[in-house]
Length: 467
Image (cartoon, rainbow, N blue to C red; front, side, top):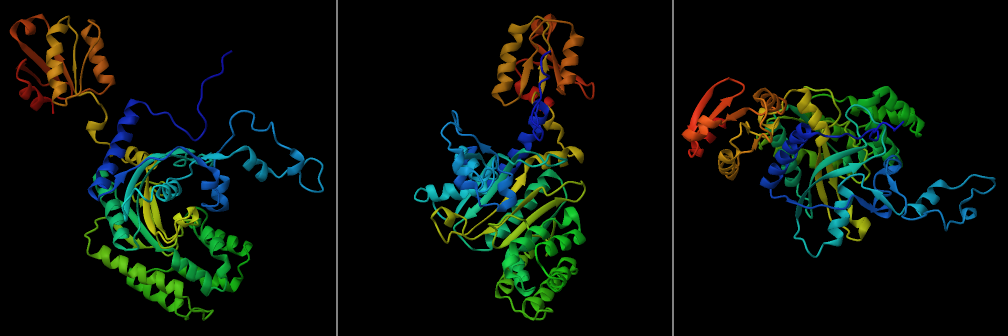
């Protein structure tokens, strides 16, 4: 018995209607990126593992898909070199993996972008503003809204430290979701503040552990975050310094004032954090810019926002839909020296990434899919034997950008109506022997039932009716 065909868990097929919506999402985001001066690039699906490893933290490294070297990747390996000392049959799997897998599927678009900038630094003008819409892969556990293969829609500007870049990204987020007619909340924090938090609680060397734990607060709750920090070595006194920050309420100005007191030495530890104060200065300037930019969606300072990627150094962003339950649908942040890993130091950048697959789910779930997206064909011409009469008409309509079809077979009209219905084609052209003789085209609006007749040569009137 033949095996039933299937696709890997965490991946999806997309048929014509799904692709119409996905292309609508991509085209909308692209159009906004272009209005802000961003230009498009693409990078390979696979990168050298040396490019990817160590950029996303230990948890991110575990989610990298590794590509086995071509040919027999294991044929020239001396396994004795990888045996764990003092054991009979245990091997260093990490070292073996690096020996047999030199490449991996990209985890995100930001690290490949940094690699691209370093390789092509003599060909591009700085500040460099690029957008990139391509798939990424993560060996994660599939669940609602979380896939192993998904598209990211990135925009980054690199080569400037100006907070105008952060403002611009907030404006892009606001514009994109207004075009989608989806209400969102834009949450902003600064990694320098989180660095300061680690300093004032007395554990500056635990900033990654604290950040990783805080980043899970929406998923596991405050108590579990505290337990994880304790498991990572933070004392009850240190956790007592961190906890009020995660619970801080009030306006942006009130939160910033409270944090200034803490970073200035008024926490229980009495420690002053210059990094934390610098982060608060940046947040104050950014929110001042946002205040004069007429942003329509909610923008708030969220001091529990961490975003676990290790390369962020400044402002961080996260966007969630207000009317649909799903994870983050856009996120990003400032990174000061990501290109330095590849040999180009002191090149600050900032970027965001729209999660196209989650936005797809949001638009479907909120019934926000525009009617014109559901079908690529605007009008179907029924085949009643007068194909030679129809071909010039269809050609003229296509020349004006109207998507149209002629049904391929001269068959029962009901079958042709059913085809139009299944494809959600809104108009049907009916041209039989009488219409051909009179030089006319009958067109029926399949939603309202209205039917009108037009001279075949009057393409402008036909277009006005079916648009």
